[in-house]
Length: 157
Image 1 (cartoon, one colour):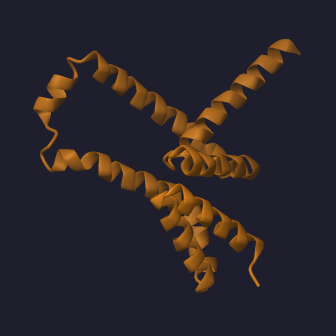
Image 2 (cartoon, one colour):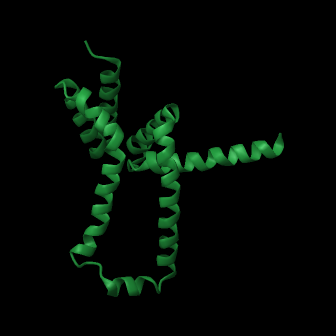
Image 3 (spheres, helix red, strand yellow):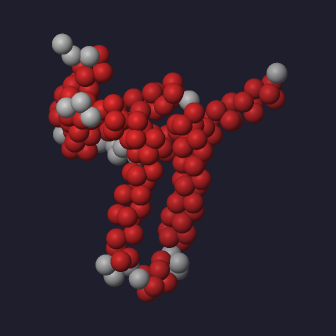
């Protein structure tokens, strides 16, 4: 009656509902509807290939919106650069973007790591009220950790 994938998604939906995580609920329902109405074969490859880039674009639009509305301008930028916290935020933004770039390559090339990262993100979103940007940042952190393990393994052996 239901495929393993559908059952898995229904379990995720139940968890999302219990955790009251609206983003995960919407994502699961959209994906199940696409699958059940027969559009999955056409849409899923596109989502897998372009979804992360589309998501990053949507997040970037959200971040830039206060600039285009005039809420953030040169005055606020000038005030921010005088704050030590702003410099910390600037550095963190640069670091996270660089880490995420490495993670993007890892997500594209290593399916079993992708599965673990996605599952970790689902757990964080449903159980700890995390935000689903985790796979990209998580992949970047995983990439750095893997490179560190490789580096230290070569030193020891």
